[in-house]
Image (cartoon, rainbow, N blue to C red):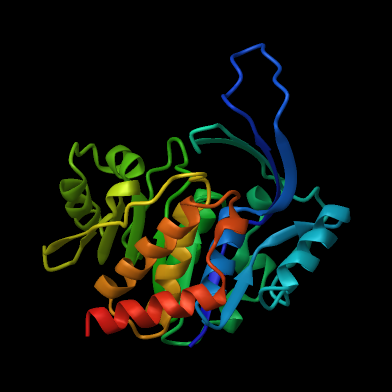
Length: 303
């Protein structure tokens, strides 16, 4: 089984400061650093660290940043499915305050132009039983087409509709599992409570739904109507910016390993809890040894 992560990759420049600047104000950051980023890349690396056979489909520019991205990704996974476009590589600026909260702005020329069905070998590399994971960074119409086409090819589809596309409510009819945080789920469903939002996401077409709740864990809803609450361990928060991607990537990798959805969500919650106790987005992701330990210990606890 192959696990296809279809999305974006960028260079993240992270600034750490005590508080966010007000409009018109300039602040000096305590520190700053460049790192690999983009929701697609973050999830691809997290998935690869679970031991899954990952194929990452994304676009980079024909520039120095694109070459740097390739070199960084090659340390984690197969980069043969990347597409090079005649555009500047994507970049994000991430500000993290003293409480660990973050603000992110992204320049996404490659992500906006990338059509995996036309610009990559995605469809040719799909086999029945594979898993396809997408986020909200690509053009909404392209995302809908990819989910529809890969599901028709026999893949299980997972969709994390983040960031939300204004004026483009996602089509969940070809989504086997949708993963959204509480704020996104509320916008998508107009439901005040996470459990109700999860139910509505299924009514909108998803086969199953997970609503992540930060420090409170997550809510798992099944097509049968069953709702399950999974608690998160209590940790000291340093930086939340990578937690959602760690959750999605870890969960997808666990499903590829044959772990059921409830256990996979429990492992993913614990992986995300590790990540918020560390600085950085991708840098905060548990490594392969930590992922292996999480998967083995959680499986043993629930056996």
